[in-house]
Image 1 (cartoon, rainbow, N blue to C red):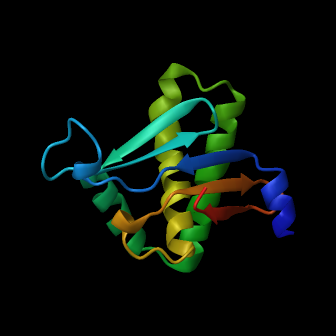
Image 2 (cartoon, rainbow, N blue to C red):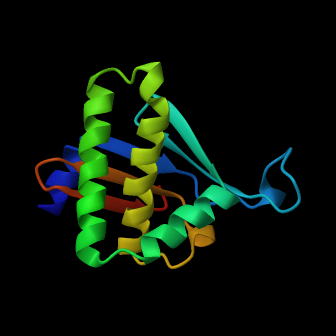
Length: 136
């Protein structure tokens, strides 16, 4: 079943990993960022404040709540992508992708968002789950 998830994803999120302020030009001294692509259509970015706030929100979720939230966000993102990602829905797509991505990182054992490594998250509709590949 895991091989199926890797072969036929409904969407793929690719991240180069968390980047501290020292690793990217033009950043303020305290800022870092987490950027990821949503399929081949969109690059999303979370700054330190958004990343920290979103990560803390996931701490309050039970395992079942996290799974349900991730699935709902994934289904909504699939629908947006199938509709061609209208400009009015870009913010919603980024939010849904961030939910799927961050919850996948937590389920994969990442305990600090600033330690998110380069990775790929593939969502498979048939299994209703993500598959995480680190170091991609």
